[in-house]
Amino acid sequence: KALRAVHKDSALRDQLSERHILIGAYANGLTAVDPTWTLSDSEAPQAHRHDLGPEQYYQFVHQWVHDFGVRIVGGCCAISPMHIAYIKQKLQPKKL
Image 1 (spheres, one colour):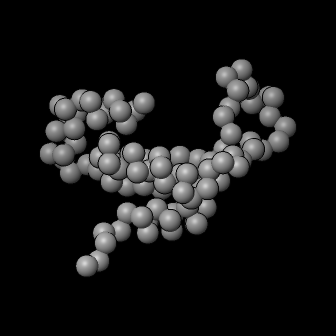
Image 2 (tube, helix red, strand yellow):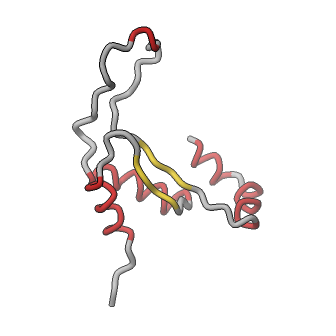
């Protein structure tokens, strides 16, 4: 939602560009948090998703980069070096 909002705001995009500020994004690979969850309910670590391998994560990254102008990409909890290596390989310019 935040990337979409920034992308739609041309004045904000212009201000960021004038100041040479790049937009970055990273997500985690954890399961969704129940909206009624509280810290006192926490007994175990949040579970990892099993459907978010490097290829699946790259689908999100591709949208961030190509649709929303993201220039810095990473990952958080449950996003592994394999995910980052895959992103790097997919985003590197093709050599002729």
